[in-house]
Length: 258
Image (tube, rainbow, N blue to C red; front, side):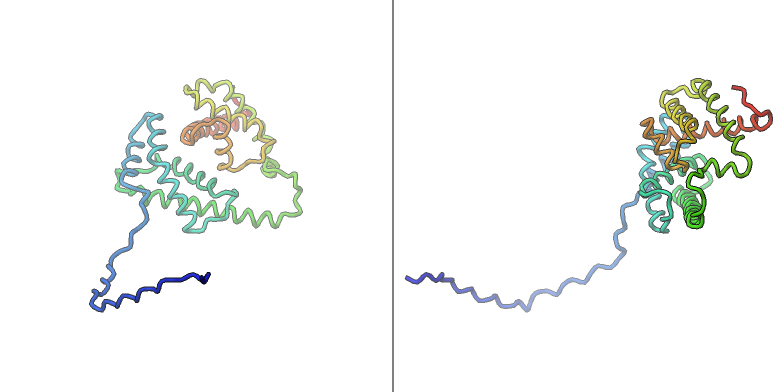
């Protein structure tokens, strides 16, 4: 018996159906767009946020309904306009910084004037990134031209060139002492005090820190406290007001009444 395998013959191919209908023409029309991230609910959420005087309610609205649209807006602005001159290694940190800036500008938005939230925050975010991008480009050029500068020359030493280094140092010492004494009067909530204390610690350790940009400080404070960004923004706003008022007092009298 032969060991060769026997194969059955293949059936003949089916005859072509020449009577089959012609393929239907492609439908014309607009292509499907990407899923919208700035929706009518985003507009409604912003209005509710602005109308509320309850900070806990505001924080919840921002976290659940505004944060993501702001995140996507920041992402699109960065990549659409190529804002890649940054002080960070990860663009996620830059997006976070844009979100913080937009949050600070929320109270300036006036929907009753007929402004569209998307247009308003797109312009605000774009202008912020233009300044941020240009400043970082200048810094990179300056670093390239400053190879002869002593490596130990820090930011505070740079400030001292205009004769204000010692004044600023003395004032911040007064300021941190003032915050220590009045923290529980200024902030009633535990999370607010956590953030305030973390910021005060950073002021006290300022000469030993290598972090001097706002974005990095926000991330550092968030890691220290475990508190969400809206709380950090709220506390820093109030501390800024105290800082300005106390500095005027210091500038006039040479000290701060702790």
